[in-house]
Length: 426
Image: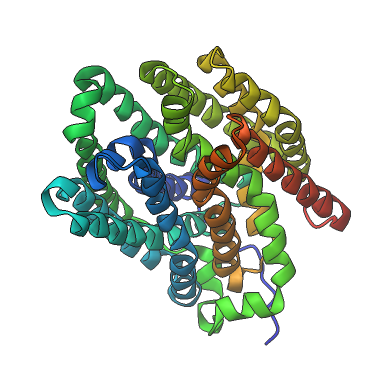
């Protein structure tokens, strides 16, 4: 079936459009808090759900972290199928409700000492459910924003991810607060549960806020002519666009996965930096990242966004190995080095969502964004921490995570050059 010719039907008043953007992004921020808090508290989770004398406990905990990411493509395909057929709003409501319940349940699970392997399996199941939900959350938010905002769409996408970073910052800030007030021993025993219970309750609050969301005008325009099998159509008709979408997402997915999901454990357990210094540095890096990606998104509405993607990708390709070599020395100033890395990735963080959405027509947009985003985040964010741990073990090189980020920078460079040659993003 031919794609219908679409006109720009994003005719809501500017204030209403931006209110919809904030509501969509706020729910995503709280949902992402629920998802990423696992990685931040990975050492405590390892101590609670695996035998105390198991030297592989942290690696196994990271494997369960990866399992949540492995579920994302399946969740993305399910969510995007319904999102492209029945509307964007329904997906928002279902995913945030399920995600919040799963997070709350993790906070209430018994430990390995109390329930044995059943506790570990319960953690795995709930983590997979989280992955299924988050697989539809961010693609839905990107699609919703691009279809709702007529002016400054790149900046609107930047707002979404800045608020997602706020969710991560909330998780990281809570980790810092609990570390300073409870101490390491209490944090390992019960402090980590506070984050999961709070995250679940905040997620339920975001569900109440999202009741005010309205369907996008772009979807309303083709509601009578929706694709019956949108995921299949994207795979059959636009496989190259999916691959390009995976590639242009690679720098953000890799960097964020390692920063959020691995950096606290890496700096504490592998490099022996003080926990308090790590928590402060990660929070500062998140603040810098959020401000920088907003600045990049603002600029990308005035220059071609793939140029900013190229700049960030090249910076990571060259700078990541040098930065991690400095970290591995054990004497780096974390509060300086981590924010510098966050600045380097700003151009990619601020533009990839808009670039990704523009690769696909409206009837298949949710499905195309979900496939590309979830494949990239599954392989790079989800498996990145586990790959970094295994690479350090196999090579003996403490700076090995920098090689992974550099490789992603190379992939992003190729994607940006491909967009420039195609001339498809103006």
